Length: 600
Image (cartoon, rainbow, N blue to C red):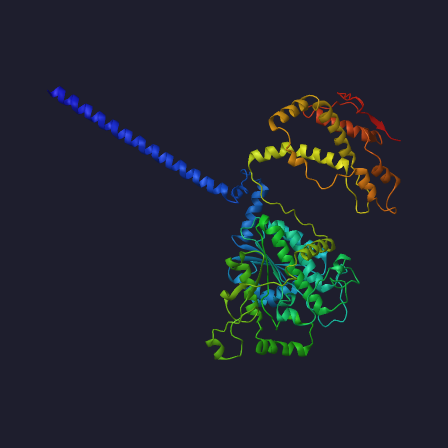
């Protein structure tokens, strides 16, 4: 009896354990399937996103640092710590001076001041009690492209590899009283070079050093005078207008003093320069923001009526203009408040948006009494004093600023004038290994097919003469004709064509019909638009009128050697060349009706 009871108990325990194990296994299975489903859903969400693999763009294998690199990183950490690096031009007075004060007051920025007068900047820094551990002065004369390039080179050494977080293009001159233009070191009108062209060159040299910053921003200080959809910009002569940029297209060298190529007016030169800055901010946003992450924006901090910007105006103007702006128009802004506004665009997280023209809704007009305060004091529009930190808004820009075609011309002509070299605007591509393998395989095939397309009609130069294929391209063409069409085309290629016809079938008739004109013979079309006689040569005419032959002209022995090397490379891609001269190659190709003729 005891044995029977024990046996029954053991059996019950075994059944219970088996049941519990089954439940545990089922639970684990359910849990695993749940995790798999969630993982698949998450992966699908990531892949469906436009930036599916963008998070992988900065993935790199671990780097082994040399002792020199370790020392450099230690020096960078000691110099900058965790502070952001800011570069600002024209900060020895006015708006720039107040902006630096605000930046340093946060203890979050290391500021490099690019100034014309280093001694003056040192005196200002002492007066303002700038923290010199976080403020570095560097010389940069915007009247000289050479000085700008030297500044950028010296700045690179000072950076120690640290990316630039902010570039504030603030420096500017205003010369409205001059009856004639003043010229820069490079022979360009000073206002346009200092305010626009030199900043344009500086951005081109520094943009690559901003890519790795977490929140890089380039800020252009614009003006209401460059935006003619306002009273200040469109109601006061002269009006900012680059017209067709004929002055820039002509090279903008002395004596051409205006971007539009017409007569010089000092006030218009200033307004045109500010219009150019605002246009270029929009263009750089369109060209570089998406693939670099840099935010390009422009601002109008308000009319700073009491500032060294007006130092070249007459004494009576400097005395009464601030009064007029303060009590009549309400557009007056003190230099301290303007400095806070430029600082805000560099500091405020809301201002990381690109392609924006920032302005501020002014508060109560100064001197108007308590009645204005009772009405909240908000003045619609940009530039008035007051309003505070939260009065910032995205202002509208004029049709001239948004003229995309003229922006492109401005970029091209300014690049020619300054000699700027801009980085390629490359969009992010997936790091998928399959894509890289396919691209590598297809690259040579695409290049070969494009050469064949160009051989039939290579196009024309600007003077009307046909574009001639280079020696290496000619060699590649004959190699393709000999190898791909001659050797492979009669073996593997023939099998591939038959298989392709069987698998793909015939091309639908609707795909081959429907043209409204018969295609003209190539020779007829070329003869209809011959190059001008002044620029044409007998050789050019022969190339146009003669039908293509089956021979390739080799001018000299060097060309023949280049051809042989090209064919050798394509036939024996993994082989080795003979150590002997080019006459003793380790191979020989005999192709019927295809010969190499030496031209005299």
